[in-house]
Amino acid sequence: MARVIDQLWEYIAIAVGILVILGGVLLGLLRGRGGRTKSAPTAPPRKKEVLPGVGDDAEEPRDTPTRTIEDRGGVDTLPPAEVLPEPAPTPTIERPEAPAGRLQRLRARLARSNTALGKALLSLLSRGGLDEEAWEDVEDTLLASDLGVEATTELVESLRSKVKVEGATDEATVRGWLREDLLTLVDPSMDRSIASSRVAGRPAVVLVVGVNGTGKTTTVGKLARVLVAQDKDVVLGAADTFRAAAADQLETWGGRVGVPTIRSDRDGADPASVAFDAVKAGAEMEADVVLIDTAGRLHNKVGLMDELGKVKRVIEKQSPIDEVLLVLDATTGQNGLRQAEVFGEAVDVTGIVLTKMDGTAKGGIVVSVQRKLGVPVKLVGLGEGPDDLAPFDAEAFVDALID
Ligand code: GDP
Image 1 (cartoon, rainbow, N blue to C red):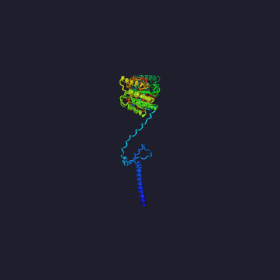
Image 2: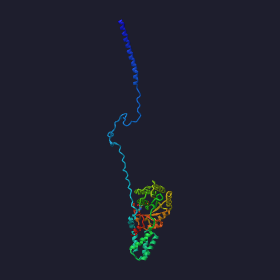
Image 3: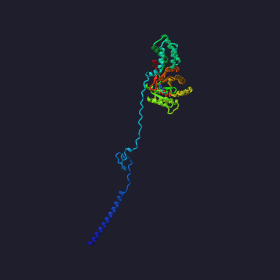
């Protein structure tokens, strides 16, 4: 019995052992399946496709160290900085001399060149008991001053009748007569103003004509200064396209007083189209006055008329012309008077500018040219300085001749 019980226990122990082993195997199998789920390789997480924000770390550190100036070899080895040109100095705009009183300032120059005339007349007239020969001398002196035959005859007749009435007289009285008669000839009543104010909402247009070499371009430049000194807004038109340097010359004059110059880049461009552009620009800029320099290629009347006629017609497509100033070189005497005649037939001259009056004793040309054209001398040039152009004043002029 005891052996049976022992064998029974033996069987139970074996069965339990088998059960423990089977349980262990089963548990192992179950564990192996669950672990595989956890450890299975997974796809790497997708990068966040957003830009790094402030404070985000860089994903990858720079693999190159930051270089310093020393690493680069110092500043000296950098390419040399471009050397900029010195900025051009801002041009200084000149303030021209006020026109009033200019003739007084320049009177000495006028007097210097015309002393011969005044002195000769005074000494002849105050000598008393004038005979025919003496009167002829008076006449010759006046003619030599370019006063012209007509005016000379009138003056001599007037003086003769005064001497006849008064008899021999002192120099002061003679000077008084001479002053009075010369003044009558020069005619202080003529309107010598220059059109330089806006008319009907547009700029005044002034055409400046004359033979090359008379001082035309210089006069346009000087006149711009006269007008600037009167606070006028001026535009210049360089329509003398035949003389190569004329446009540059004019632009320089304008630049000195801050006045724009309308010009062509090309020598020989059509003067009428430059004049047209200048008037147009003047209107757009709301200028007071447009001054147009023209070419003075005279030489035959037909050519001149064609050229000036075209400039005039083209300008008049946009604006009437208010003033035509004829520039004459006072030293050229009779030649100047012939030019006046030709120009007078080509255009309606409204005023005369006599240049180089500082270099001539022929002050009488003022009277003869006014008579020839029936228009006043409005300006006189008395030197090469920028402000050596003066509004003509009859009294100051006559005083300069005989004082
Ligand atoms: P354009 O060909 O008629 O335009 O003549 P410019 O204006 O070029 O002048 C010719 C020369 O005359 C220049 O040397 C000027 O300086 C000179 N000139 C102009 N006006 C006067 C003046 O009133 N007096 C003197 N002495 N010279 C002048």
